Structures are given as C-alpha cells and as structure tokens.
Length: 563
Image 1 (cartoon, helix red, strand yellow):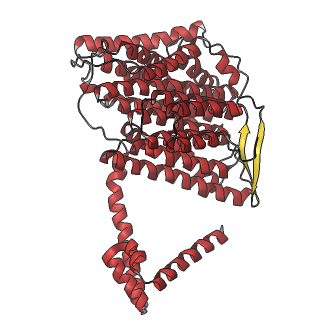
Image 2 (spheres, rainbow, N blue to C red):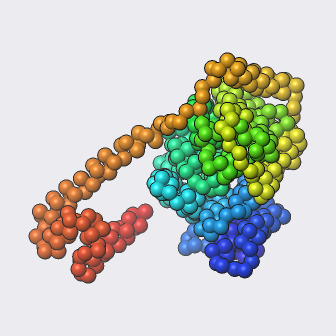
Image 3 (cartoon, helix red, strand yellow):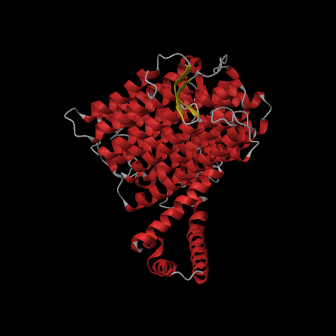
C-alpha cells in the first residue's frame, strides 16, 4: 500500500469524481466508494501502516487495531446506508460533502498521531457544514455558521493542546493521556465539545434538524461517534467521564419529552445515547470499554434508521413537526414497520440491538460499584422509551389522524431503512459477531432471566403508563413551540461580548494613534473609523498594506518561535 494511502483518500477521490460531470451515473460512484474504501483495509492485519516523515515529526495515516477497525467498519456501513438513502439527490455539492465528511471521519479513526487527527478532525467540520447549508434557507445559513464556529473552535483547542503536549512530552502519538497538564485538558475539552458534553451540547440540537433530510442522517452517524472513539483512545478510565456521561444520558429526557420537532427529539435522544458510551469509557474496564464500543456501533445504526424514517416522512409530507403529523400508518406502513424496529432498538427491548449492547455498560457500572450511576442510566433507558421509542412512531403513524394522504417512501429509502432495521434485529438476536470484533475478549451473556425480566418490567410498565395517560386524555398534546436550551444564554451574551471587544479594539487603536504622528497611522485610523478593519487592508496604499502584512508576518514568526 502506498505511503500516502488511507481509506479516506478513496472518499476524497470519489468526491472529486462526483463534482466532475462524468457519463457514469453518480449513484454508482457514490455506492461504490464506501465498498472500495472498506476493501482497502478490511483484510489487513492489525499493525501501523503508511508512516511518513514531516520535518521532525512521524505521522501515521493508518493504524489498524481492534478499536479503530470497529469504528471504521461501522462508519463505512453508515456511509453506505446514508448514501443509499440519499440516492435520489441531484445536488453535487451535498453528495461531495457527504463523501468528504465520511472520509474525514474514517481518516481520523485511523490516525496514529495527533497532527493527523487534527487534520481530519477539521475536515469533518468543514465538510459537514455543507450538509446544513445545502438546505439553502436563511435559517440554515445562520445555523451553519454557529455550527462551524463551534466545530472549528473544537479543532483550535485540539491544535493548541497538541502543541503544548508536544512541548511537554516531545511526542505527538495519539495514545492514552492523563489529565495532568494544560495541554491534555485542552485536548479533553476539544473532544468533549464534539461529543456534546452537558452545557457544550446545544450545537447538536441546533444543527441536525436544520440540515437537509438526507444530511441529518449523515450527520447523526459520524461527528459524535468520532468523539467517542477519541475519548476511548485518549482518556479511557478517566473518572470524570463517568459522571459527565450519566448527566448526558439523563438530562435530554426532559427536553425530548416536550419537543415538537421530531428531528430535534432524535438529536436529544442521540445525546442521551452518547451518555451511555461516555460512562463506559470513563469506567475503563474491559467490559465497560467493550460496552461503549458496541453501543456506539448499535447506536449508529438505529439512530440512522430513525433519522431516515423521519426524513422519509418529511420527504412525503413536507414537515417533521409532531403537531402536524399523525395517522400515516395506512399511507406509509413499511416505513412505520422500520420505524418501530428502530424505536424498539433504541428502547433496548430484548432481541433488538440496543438491549445487547447497552447491557454491557449497565453491567459494568454495577460491577464496579457505581450504583447511583447505574440507577441514572436505568432511568434514562425508561425515558428513552417514552420520548423516542413511543413518541416518534406514535406522533407520525398512530396519533391523531391529520388527514394526510401520501405515497410510501421511495424504493431506495425503503431499502436503506430495511437494511438498517435488519441489523437492529440481527445484532439483537445474534450479538456474538459484534462481540467478536470488540477490543477485548467478551464472555458475556445478555439474555439471562434476571436481565430480560428486569428490562421487560421497566419497559412494559412505562408503556402502560403512556397508554393510561393517552386513554384518560392526560398525555400532553404536541404544541407548536420553541424550547429554550443553554445556547440561549450565549446567543444573548454574544452580541454584547462582540460589541465590548470591538469597543476595546477601537479604544486601543485610538490611543495608539494619538501617540504616533505619522501620516500613515492617521490614515489607517480614519479608514478604520469609516470602513472597519477590512477597510484598512482594502483602502490603504501599497506601502501601508506592505507594512501591515510585515507586521502580521512578524507576529506569526514570533509566535512560532515561542512555540
């Protein structure tokens, strides 16, 4: 294999091919790319490949081990399913962005060093924002800007952290790190932003519902799962993650229960599922890490399935609002069946994938004495049934009939949903093939009598409570509303903060201009006051621009010398 070869390159070449008007059907290219990329690494033995030298640094583009292989395999499958679901698309830009996004995620999973990780980390941010902008609405444009700012901010923290880590250790290897330095803390926070830690999470619920109906399926698969992988690789066994994950699993229950936008409901449920994975990473035992990885794999599939089902309904009806939907069981029965499979999987019903994977994390938390965390995760599981397992299919298919008469979803969407539903059932009934791929040998039996009975009791009593509320007319009707999350605070604060920074810059500039009598500086101040900072560069003389650029380059040089 060439030294610069990485499976991500297959996706990048595919994206370039999509943008060029070939006679070959784009759909064939799109579906071939994940398969070719998968074939490029599927049969390779575990080892480090394609190590290249960059100055004094040694970069590793393809580290294949048990952890990276599972995530790369799941990402390849998710890319194939999402591209199949979006087979009807004619938007070249969205198709290319999807390929670059998936390729960057897979490239990051295989990265053996922090520099390579950073490059692909930013690649996921830059590519994925076009899945939001592809909707081509003013709201999507502003949402994309917020999403991009947060994702790029995560990348800059990762960059700063890896530079400090390199200065302290002399190594850029992406391996286990301890939270014993400022650099590793910056890396930890960068991973946390992308993983949607509590108080850092609202970008997820803001952006995923704003994407195109196919873009939200793709978004649900990669960004946050990549962060889970990064945490498992770099910070396994970090105790903070246990409590962060427990909070992540529990708090979205309340937001999802009152949310009207069904894609936002799924975004909150995704946030909750991430909490289980983070708890597993934080516990750090072999069983817990296997649980985190297995649940990441299962969650990628059933979350994609649920986003596909809501996307298919949105495609046919033009809305994803629960208050505008209902009674579609007769018009879209196949989609409803697949949605029920995803709902049962995310609710951890026995013989569905969520039961076979989530139980690993629950058992690990109980075995390590984290009883309170175990109770929180159990409560979150019940909440998941109510706000996603029941609410999503009920609102679309079984609730109040809104009189919508539409066609069934297109064939390619049904095939994608059918494959995902088959995996949800297959992993649940026969989890051993997935267990065999996990980083540590698994000697675990999920289908014990106690476990099955306990889970069924919780789920059935929750379902009976829902039925009682519906029967008595006590269940809250879906209302047209906007729910406020923590992002409301920084949205309110940001304009004032920017105004404060702008005022400080202008005041400092004016103070400097009073001390300097050169005509050039007086000109710059005048242009700044009239046209702003961009006007300085646009309207000064060639000499003035040269002086400014020399100053900028000098500052960059001094900064690099210091680092």
